[in-house]
Every structure is written in C-alpha cells, then in structure tokens.
Image (cartoon, rainbow, N blue to C red; front, top):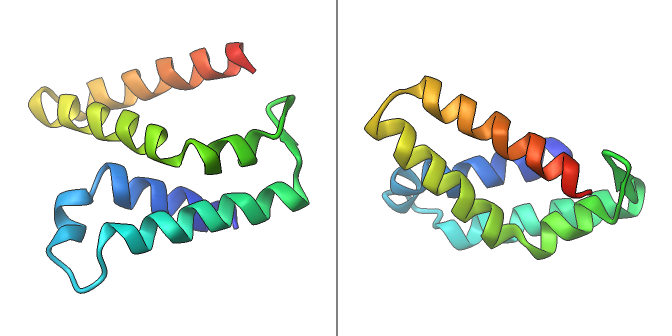
Length: 98
C-alpha cells in the first residue's frame, strides 16, 4: 500500500503535466493515493513515532502534492540537486513536527 500511495504522490506532484496528457487523469491517482494511505493507516497506525501518520497523509494528500509540485518546479528551474536537498529539508522538518 505504501508504494501505491507514494507513487500516486509522485505522479500527481512531480509528473502532473505528463499525467494530464494521458487517458487516466490526476483525479484517478489522487483517489488511489488517498485510498492507499487510508488503508495503510489501518495496518500501521503510526510511523516516524507519529500517531495517525498515514491517515494525516491521506487527509492532506493535496497539500503534500502541492509541496512536491513546488519542489519539482524549483528543481526543474535549477537542478535535481536542489530538488533532493529541498525534499530532505522538508522531510527533516516534518519529522520534527511529529
């Protein structure tokens, strides 16, 4: 389930332009991603020592997609190194919140 949710996040956030040019649109990937994280929550109710981690990701799916989209645009403007370093910084900040 985690792989399905993560893939949906990447497809919606990083590859949204490519997905828009296919038969399956972004709403399909959003639905699949949200469902995957919701189901994952029932199996793994906490992650990174944060209760309801996957439930929160499911409920905030659009917000996470927006962050990935912003980071991907910055990465495309500059370099992939910036994308990876920005993602690492975001991930570290997210760990501190939980």
